[in-house]
Image (cartoon, rainbow, N blue to C red):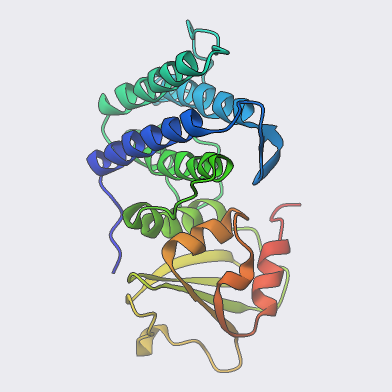
Length: 265
């Protein structure tokens, strides 16, 4: 079964995806070009989001386990307008985040915006989520530059679980009849979401998506299985590709209801 990445691997991937983001910004046709997957943003807006976000998360990690809100970074240089200077500014932002995460233990508590999920409030969970945020926006920048690439396999496979435990798992009651949704990725890795009155609970399955006798779907329970590459599955989570990129087997209404669900609303 899939094993979550350790902090040193997460730092390596933050560094790698940050470098790929800077390369895409350098290759973009114009800093004022619209980003197709973020239509309200230009390339410049996307760069500001990534740069200021990494400075902010670096400061948040550095603020310690007692922090009760996201930190406001101090002494951050204003975002340059010149492209070469902008790329250097982005490198400094990524390094600020890496420096902060390099000084902590993965299990150390950190303020996080997710409070009702299976993802813990730790520095390791922050690093794991940062990999995905940078990776998704790297794809946005690459698409704008005309050189889109799938997510690297290690980023994508871990990204499936990271999204599910951080953004889907919840204790808010599922407002429909109980259902089960399984995601299986071609590279090896499978996860189950149980949707019921207790909310949405995420568990790992054997890599081929098979169920044991102890984990069988009860007869009569609505059940859907979605299969794809890990990269396409993560892209579908973040609305970067349409859901029809997935190979679906079973009750497709389950997925429609999950996409429309707004827990706590």
